[in-house]
Image (cartoon, rainbow, N blue to C red):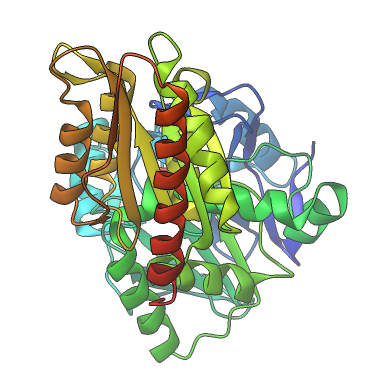
Length: 404
Ligand code: FEO
């Protein structure tokens, strides 16, 4: 694939990673892309590098447009290796270029690379760089996704290069949102946004709201959002901004998800009966077995739904390990505004249900207690209890959902 023009003289020169399925532990069934952008102005400017494994691909796209030695400026919006680890190879070709990044970006680059020969200039929010016919405006976005992060606004083209923000782990031969929607669907694109937000940005909802408000106050008109992962938003930039605001405000669908694992199918049998109870209240419900579902997908489904029921058998007086892994990952993402409960089978002492509820209380989620335990295997009577437990949970979910 050639370089792709985004606006006259502004090109995508990134790489598509069709094969990646494990992105530092985040399972990415759709693959990903590492986007970077080249602006052909009087002072040729590259925005972001790419992952080192893919830098040759990016360099060949750059070479199809210009001699890389002519690059005068390199903006590093984010130093995480998926965006910056190819920088040393690019600097070998264009050692005279000046690098622009935040203060924390500079410190990070100094840890990742030998920067002694590099000219690095620190920028902060509001700083501008004239590159000829265009001016770049820098906006720091600390913690979206790392402390070093920033975005770059190309004023004359009204393009916001948003690094991780508004991205999707989505490998596709389409570079733009409208093209992707025509070839696949808006639902799939939205699902990729939910997935990315849930796994990467869920803890930073308040910062996202602040940053979007700050960009609003700067009065920037945004025609195009060009993230460093996934498709470029040229038809629906407002839609993805609204999606982010909604997610940051705790938006969820009025439905439930049951996330469980099982040893001898007893907890699994409970999950089925609970699901039927939930659905009896007119609330849609997905059922996910953790050993058949990656934690990343489970977290995304957790985040899309207003309510979640987690099921675990008791093992060694506590939570089954697959369920424990899910809860540890979820805790780090600091979820909010969800109603939850727990269920599971036990042989003698029990303990998993109580531990799951404790974990949810520590996350400050709305818990429905005391959950539900079943000894060894659910009898017909127990199945009725499970159904009723699911039905009552759905009732509570519908009430809770009205708050948002
Ligand atoms: Fe896509 Fe925070 O790196």
